[in-house]
Image (cartoon, rainbow, N blue to C red; front, top):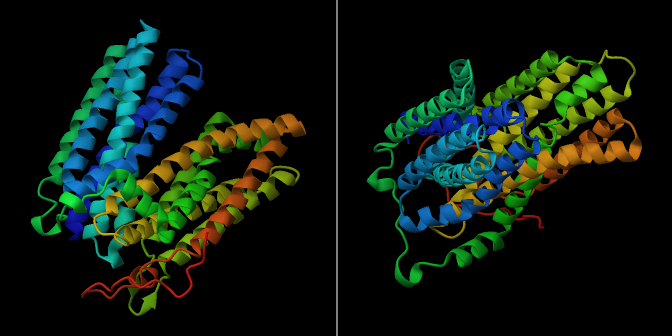
Length: 446
């Protein structure tokens, strides 16, 4: 696939991000502030959207058996657009009938999770099948950077259009965003999956059941090891999301505006790390920038060190610790390892049984969604539990950051034993036939 084709698929991911951001941020705020609902309500709805993504392996299996990926991407985007719009309608409805609105919100967020599962899984499989090994980290960077652009642009424009707020204006803005994003995605998909890139779907006795296909993927030691790595790293990655700003306010005295800026520093670091991660597995001018595995291990180790820095800064007296620099480094490390992990995911998807790429990618996507949802919950729950046991809020946050650092070290140890194809774990020749996968002499075991 040319860079133009990769950019077109990145536009699809940008459209996906544009539709998701309203349900995971804007609607949450409206429920908690304007509607004065308990914060648990939007939290459970977002958790539902993550939980539904356990269907990712089944969605991937469907695209494997169908032989084409674009119908699943296009259909998933349509379901996502409908779900996002229904979630906005439900939020508006809650102002007059909370029970009915909540019922519709459950349906809307369920559809959001199903749409993300169908579109996101098949999109990654299509990238994995059509992008050369040497370009995969850079392609993953482009796709994820444009998704962040989708987040930022949609949040900024929608925030401007929502003022002055009214339920009718919310429905109009959400409907416009969903329709525009869906049209962009469908236009970007047109003709991107050429005849030569389609999968030969199994037929007759060669077509396995989903349970058999999932069992085959799980019994593969590389796929299983990578699934566990993704889960552990995502728990560590997301556990600080909901506690970093409160920690900065309590320990370092940052105001709400200053703590929000600190979150922006972290996101800026994540973006910088993603851009750096594009170098993983590449060789320019005779200089190697390191393998995907090295970037994963290094990124997880650097994340652990950055979290250890927060622990050290918390234990020191005063507020002289360079908190912003510390948080920026944490973001860079997170971004670098995540891009390398996505590149590895794309490299590993085609290994093992043929026509199982979607199942394997779905398995890893489900682990990512589960780890991300669980990490956010455990981060807040563990801080509350530690505060109750220790009696100090700062000490409670220190315990959580230390636990996250330990999880990142565990993820780095797991990543060291991930068996990547030779061309992906080192660097790939610029052109020519791809090397067959030959597992290394020592795989390690779990």
